[in-house]
Length: 229
Image 1 (cartoon, rainbow, N blue to C red):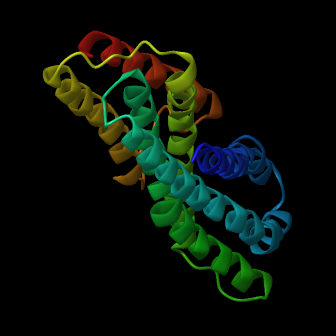
Image 2: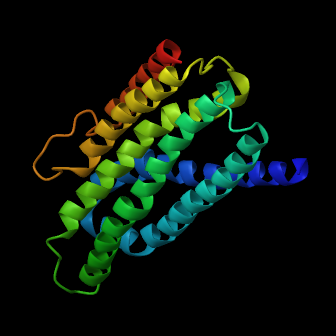
């Protein structure tokens, strides 16, 4: 069983590095490049580069969640489903990861399919799809939300084994932890999903703002957990 758990953990890390590495590539490298380059180059990259990158991106997310959930269920079950420091940290990080996975598969990928199809059509001389721009905007906001969430997510994943100071002392504390952290995560996720057209989404409209927001969210979640559990 120890060997099987190590296998699951290793695969979780391997797929996670692939997923988050591409997430950072998209937001820190590709998006600024697309903003500065000529339209023919951008359209060509959207038609040929983006589909390949998105394949590894979405299946990296899927593998991360599958192996992570399997590891969580088996390992946590061995502890008797106790809400100890490990469980509080890993469940907080896992909740963020699940939201990020949802964004990949149900927001980013569907909207990027519209962008890719439009790029393929226009590069072949076809008409541009007016839905492509708003689809790219929605995918971009969800992607930047994932960058923001990745900062606290990675902290709590590491804290499960290396920062054992989130002890759930009471049922009331556990409930407050779930409600308050869930409210923060839910509000930020709603910001990425609702009213994207014609709306300024600070701090998601700049890379600096996204990174700063990630550390702010990390700090808020840590403070909540330290106070209530």
